[in-house]
Length: 466
Image (cartoon, rainbow, N blue to C red):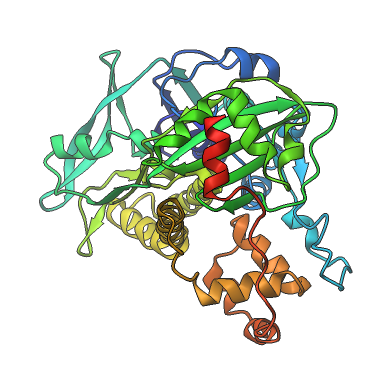
């Protein structure tokens, strides 16, 4: 068994650490934020401060694939989340009324998932980590750099530990960077003389305005969770302990949207959206929480077929991150952590092969989620810009229109769409299934779904102006 250091004690760092500890490794998780999570969900929400996580109080969702990974790799985690008041969500209940085939399927349960607010879910994962005998979680300890040892590849640095803010060097057979979208990993590697990583970065161009509510029961879902409404979008998510959130987001350059910081203005715009207005029927527990400046970023440690470092890998947002509107970050990070566990099982004794195998598995199974989200973001920003300028947007992707149309009538297509939304399957996988193209073709002449009802640009500006 090995000594492994995980840099970063967020949800993905803790999940990766727990999976590796379950395999008998001695795992040290280093988290720069010093505060321990409080003992109750209410205290976690009200009192836990995570300065290192800008989006800590923005909406998150633990989709079906997170539950699938947790139930396979960390079997008690779902029960722990439920015990903390997290909520079951089932996107098959109800099915669209236009679907006639309403018979349940044998594997429908896998689409259900448990979710909650980020402070609450992270506190649950942290408690599991604190209890694990092979995991040492140290809070208030920042990684300041990497320690290099003897290279296993000519000209390629080999990491054998980390240097910390306490002055201690911690030796490791593997260092896992799970420090999130603000990772200093590329800087650490540059200091060791590593060749530059392959890095792609761009501003997603979105600004988010979120408000949380509580009430005796969760609002009924009658529209899409993430609904485009002209030049803005509406995101509605269930939380834990009878809480939920509503988010309005648009283009960062859409200056009038700044008025959404005012709770009355925020509520006025949501109330003008017929399928989401009832999500205001509760008691607000926050004002309007704003967030912008979110970068899409992708980092790869195998460049031109050759590793730039051994003894070091990055998972989750430290590897690649996109805008949070689709709510997929933690779910994709869980898939990535699961891949890491499998690769470590087979290749820990061969540092070069470990890096190569993890890169290959990542590119095959995780990178497509990133690429698909980037494409969706670019299309949606272009659409928002067109509405804002009073122009007709470019026609949507015909394949996407065919899918959305068929999903309103065909039970199998709808299930495939939900698998995409909840990260159980990639679009490429669903669309290539036997008989799927034939199902889509049956509705080729059917009118596409009507746009989500809500204020047009002129009415939106009126609502923002009060």
